[in-house]
Amino acid sequence: MLYLKSQPITRWISFLVLMLCMNFYGISQDIHYSQFYNSPFNINPGLTGIFNGDIRFAGNYRNQWYVDNLGQYMTFTASADMKFYPKDRSKNNFWSGGFIFNYDVAGDGQLSLGHLGLSGAYTTEFSKNNFLTLGGLVGVSQRRFKLEDLLWDNQWNGFQVDPTRPTGENFNNTSNVFLDLSAGFNWRWQKTARTKFDLGMGAFHLNKPNQAFLDNATEDELPNRFSAHFISSWQLGGAFDILVHGNAQWQGPYEEYVIGSFAKLYLNQQRGQEFAISLGCGYRFDDAVIPKIALDVSAW
Image (cartoon, rainbow, N blue to C red; front, side, top):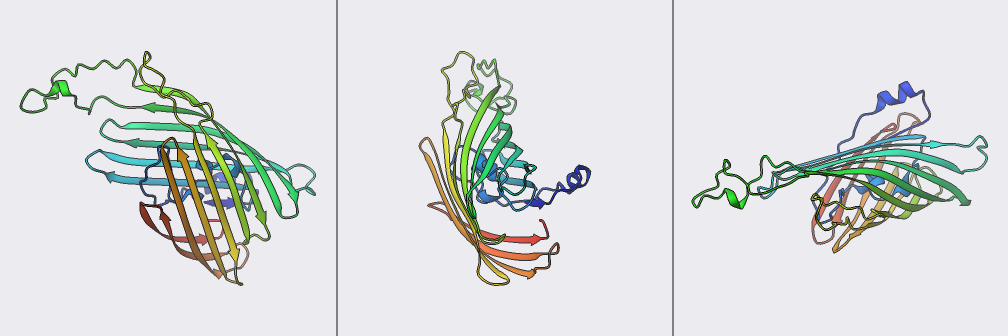
């Protein structure tokens, strides 16, 4: 992620470079990342504007090559958000806004999901060092697939599959566009820039959009997804921090639980020239161990 103080628009746009984040496959239906804290809008719209700085960019990319001959599995996310401060800066209340773009594709039929969403949030300081944020996200999603590379039972000639034989299938629609609504809240306790704690929850697909491809088919509702998280950083010494985080997600019959921790060492603490290295490990219950390494260079 990139966090910036206010700059002229022509300057901060030039800093838009995506970070690559390693991720692993799980059982959740929606897009999800092992490094969930590096894709905040995908876990909670209430995290809009919750960062140290004025402008934030984040990018995620995952490519799992081929899995069980099901074809390539690729996921890409880009997001940005910024704060809008009131004229009276004596109060720590502010609005935030941002956008997120998700693209996910898998399988020989290139079943894909594209999503573009706009988020907005309001943050208020309800007591010293304690901030409450309420956020919402309005998005448009498109699910689509391609028929060209798919094979069907009618193409079996008794000995082998013959792609030139008629499929016997009649798809009048290989694409579906729908409105997608989400909301969430986040509580932040922040003592210093390096000692802070976030706790919140997001709810996705509030309108349960119909994702069916066939016009005359029974509606196929996209089930709600609920995501609860905590993300914390604790300064234990002049140059040493501990970062601890966790995420739980539920969607229909699917559930996922991820916990992890970093040890972060600052090799340079000079303002504007900060340099730190972090090592850690995460665990997704009943699924995967997730080794992690991170570098912090100035605002990156």
